[in-house]
Image 1 (cartoon, one colour):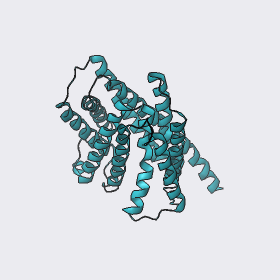
Image 2 (cartoon, rainbow, N blue to C red):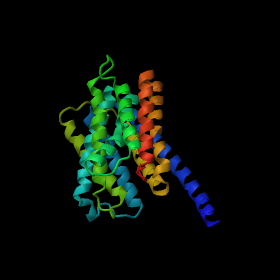
Image 3 (tube, one colour):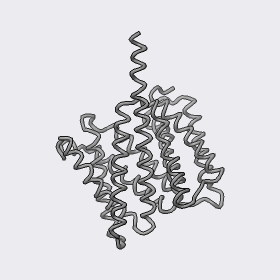
Image 4 (tube, rainbow, N blue to C red):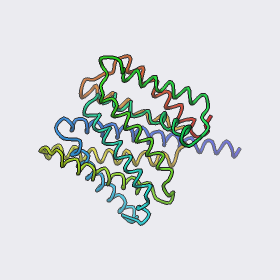
Length: 294
């Protein structure tokens, strides 16, 4: 009887977590659409700096309101800064790819991260990887080939940017394992935002274009969407089971396809859609089996 009650109690939390993941990915993908639009008038460095500035302010206020210290001593953990450097590299690659590629293509290719993490687990962490997971990796890479079409006319070197972003995201996740578990996730995020913002500022030294108040306001909205999206994901992971909520992270690709069609009239062809399906399918399998390793 108690076992049955426990199962009933878990399900509402899982569904709430799934909703939070979908909301979070919708907000993050909408932020990506704003960044792509802004990239038509601004440099990548400017976008990262202005959005980052608003995001740092947003999260700093959030931390102060929650009653936590703004900059605890634990934030000087070297692994937190190494993780931030990886996230910064991933962000620069991805935002640059948004300015050069259809949003759906960039958003899909960056989601090969579960494939790369599986490879890293096998070759660097010496973890056991089952036959099923190896098959999922193979299927995922087949999807990458369909999306990029490396031997066709539609191939662009810019497609390497979201793949590079996925590589740095994989490194970021490996670095995350090294961070002191006593350091609150919000501080890890704040360090990352700070590093990305400073990197954007340095990049603006290479190219600065006039920025209208309207465009700055859109980037402010982008920062809020990004911040709320991250907070939704953090809360989802804390209340739900990873194996249950993992598939819902791919909501972001659907949202990216929606914005791509609505704003730029871009709709992936049948080969790209097929590649997306393979990448999403393999990613869902890898994420959902990550807990058990089966």
